Length: 387
Image (cartoon, rainbow, N blue to C red; front, side, top):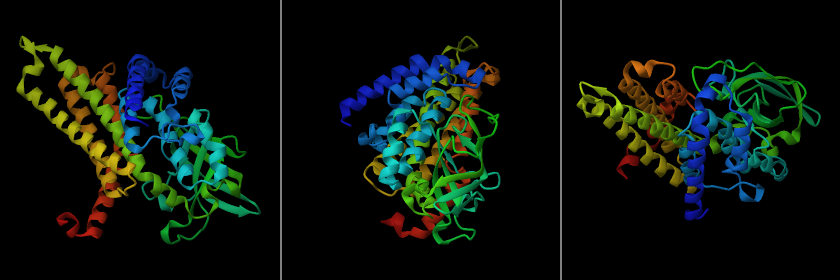
């Protein structure tokens, strides 16, 4: 996309977010539901297809272009971003990178249009960070596979029309995690059911639920890429860009939270002057701005490198870890600046404080990122930093 078109689209998205989404935040939080009409408006704007190639009806944005729009979307409650997030990431990119021609033709146009909201079913009751230890099975039966298992905390599950299900096609753990296979499972497949919506700490309106597979039969053509044992490869291929996307959500929320904190500090009077004039409050604002500025720099550099085709697993993990921790610090300081008002349920920063907490958990916890970074640094050795 040329620069002028991207700037124009960014301005359009900004107006939509500020004029349509932000005014609905309290309603969404109260009702735990994003209105269907808003989801349809996002679809009409093409937001579900930002990363789908143009030949399949999307915009085909590079990572560095995608983050500019996610930054705008994430100014509002993360519930809105949640509805499009999987479509932008593994819901589409797994098919783009590994899918067969038939899978691309069947699913990508519907994902891009927003007709098909997607979900990614990996986490299980006893398998989270150790994703290779999943227990959901896929047993070959003639030309079909029969899937059994339960997936937990699956984003978009209650509304998804297509679910990418990761399952074991071998009872043994194989080298390279080749025992894991990815299947494209339609929501209406017999034997597939969705549990009740989870009651979460934050992000009301962003639905998660269990996905239960009870003898769900799918054809062999439902395997992403048509070959067993490539599920872990699929996850690795889309992981870097997915973590960049989450980091852009952290920055978008960080901008909004700092905006709220600064607006309060400049208007709140104590001892006859705005509290923003007090040095200790200024220190809280300064630390938050430094966190935000550092994260934005990391984000744009990493997104640029992803867009050029570089493998940036080390950088993407460092970015995701720093960004999610930073937005948590920014949110905590914002509540502190608001004082007692920031602890009240009708406070914007109280809601945002709870919403951003999960960013340190999904797409790999902070602790998993630390392990990835540490192992990669040990593998590369001291020469990596001296080069």
